[in-house]
Length: 218
Image (tube, rainbow, N blue to C red; front, top):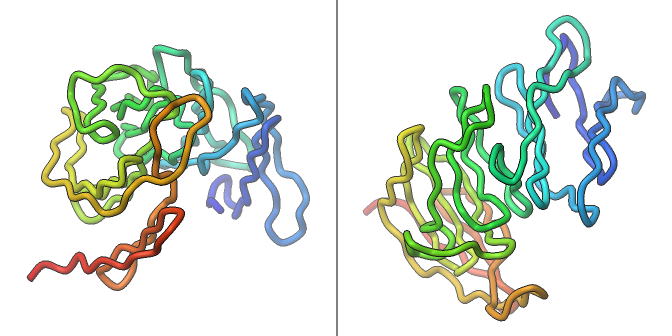
């Protein structure tokens, strides 16, 4: 749900288009055609001010500008394999003209919102290494808390880091759970379950257990 063009808009993104609906009546405000590969429309559309981002598999992404005087959008740029981001499993974070997104290749990207330029890239959140090669459908989930981010890696690590237009600054990491899920295109197991944060705790699960961990500083 977003506020734009003077109204509340319910965004529905399916494998053929992004759609804005009147949440009270279900009537369609606007539709933006955007066909995804392998019918993957997984991430939640992200708004930052007057722009809106969606992205998916194999370099497909688009940044839209929201109309100020009515419900509507127009295309600002369309991503490629080298610009923008294609966050398949995780929803990116947008703020202050910048986007942080985990790309399909498993790298965390810092992207300029006005141009789609990739300013920096690191595989450390997903693989734990700086010199890694692409990881097919590499995944880490981003949640901001204060001036830091909590990242949950597919390796089962809970990571605290600072993200800025200058780069990725890892503060700490801790092995929270064992990855248990297979991936058809890879041999290793992964953790692709998004955690929940509440009451100063993180709630996370794999395929065999659910845990609650207290994050309050002692």
